[in-house]
Length: 142
Image (tube, rainbow, N blue to C red; front, side, top):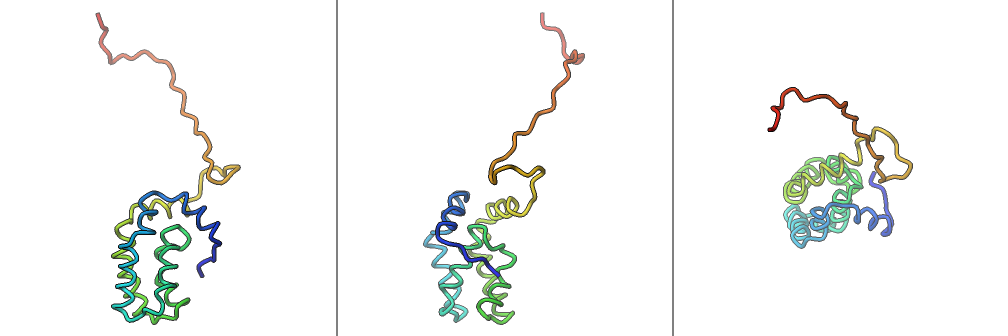
């Protein structure tokens, strides 16, 4: 389901992230929350893989809505267990950075109007030219 990325590809994606997501990715609080969630749900043996999947969501590789499905398929969690863990991770990790995640995934998912020659390079949009007209609503200045 999730793609495997090399560390070079990961750091390239990391470089393009908004600062809010960069901070969340390596925050001590994020690690503590994941550990606490795993401990509460008695899934400490899956901690490393869950950290990996959370980081994939934060860098834009794995969509947040696919997180629960990945827990079920890749880690073999039962549906209820995966739903509970996913809900807690959404609440404590993804929700605080929700606007940045929405912007990240909107950029990844939304197709551009015109394809650019190079990825990441936006084409310059032309402004419509205004026709010179006399403004009848202004009073003359004396």
